[in-house]
Each structure stands twice: as structure tokens, then as C-alpha cells.
Length: 261
Image (cartoon, rainbow, N blue to C red; front, top):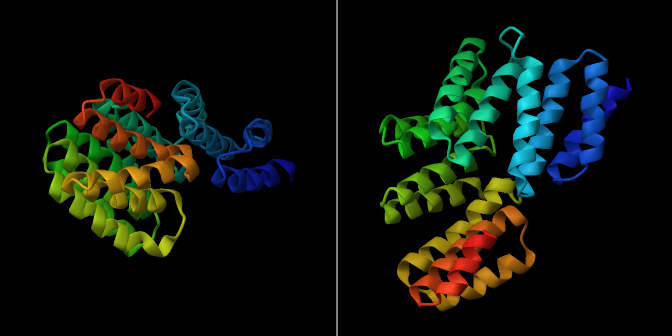
């Protein structure tokens, strides 16, 4: 029927970070047809599109709708997925304690239902948040997530390497973080232009140059990324250019890049 054709179309458009109107129509049609799981999936897609466009408030609205569609339902693969996705974006917002609380529910549900991919996804979210909160268990959760996604040959493994490297760098171990990113880029190159794999390729081309002081070469790469890459991938480019400008005494330029990021 029409609602499910719209949902299939929405999945294709979501990959392109577009098609809000089609995805919204799918969500509405699926609710009318009584398919709340399908509607929740559509809301997750809308939330993700909004996030990648830099619209966090709209993203949260769609996540809240997804939760409302499944919260009264018994444990299910979609409910576990919704919880894990919400945990992920709470973590990305910096709401680490909330991310851990929601993510642990997703982990328990995924383990009970034997949903390995959802489990790996939730472990990533919780691990990242826990590590930033100072809990060393977070690193083990991230390593477990990477191990699972490697076994499943899932492109989501790129997110595991990305976040493990990021928390190491955030907490001061820059060289080890860069080493993890390099390992991740080599591991995920087989997935081609898939979002997070591409992000890792970018960051591995930038981070070592920054750490090792090859700033002129890095600036050339940054300018190319800013001219051609997707918005989400531009964040890291603005970040590194801002750090270089700060290091060279260009305070106004550094502030501009921070604001753009």
C-alpha cells in the first residue's frame, strides 16, 4: 500500500539528507494505517535530516515524536532502535548522563531480543558518554561496539572508531586518538563514501597534520573540504582551521571558525 511505498522512498531520500516532505507524509500515512513502528522509523529519519542540517531543536522534536509512538508498546526491535538513536543524539548534544540512562535501556532491550547491530549502536553511545564522564568502562563499551560491528561487517563500525578516537583526544591523549582514527580509516575504507567512513577519511587527513605542525599543508586541505564536502564534514575543517588561526594569533578568525562550526 501507499504508506509502505512512501516509507521505502523515504529510506532512499534519507541517505541523501533530503525529502523532508515525503518522509513527513510517510510518517502521517503510517500512523493513519496503524503502523506505529513504521511511523517511528520515519520520525527518526526526519530527526537525522534535521540534525545534519544544523537544526537541533527540530531534530529533538522528531525524536520526541518517535519516542511517543513506541513508549507504550512492549519491547521490540523498533523500540530498542528508537531508544538507541535518542541516546546517540543526547550524547552528541553533550547531555551525557541522559545519554547513558536512555542508552542502558536500549542495551538491555537489544541483549534480550538478540539485536546485535542495535546493541553495538547503543554500546557506542553509552561508551562515549561514560568515557567523557570519567568512567573507564566507557572505553571497554566502545571497544566492544567496534568488535561487534567488525564481526557484522557493518559500516557503523566507522562511528565506533570515530568516537573512541574523539574521547581519547578530548581527554588529552591526542596521539593515541589519532592512532585509533588511522586504524578506523583503514578498516572502513571498504565502505567508500558512506557518511561516517568519509568523515574518518577527512579527519585522518587533518588531525596528524595538525598534531605534527604541518599547518600550511593542512590549510590547503581544509579549504578543499570547505569548498566541496557536506556540511557535517565541514565541522571538523572549521575546527582545525580555527585552531590554527588561534595558534597564529588570529583571534577574530578563530572565533569566526568556531561560530561556523
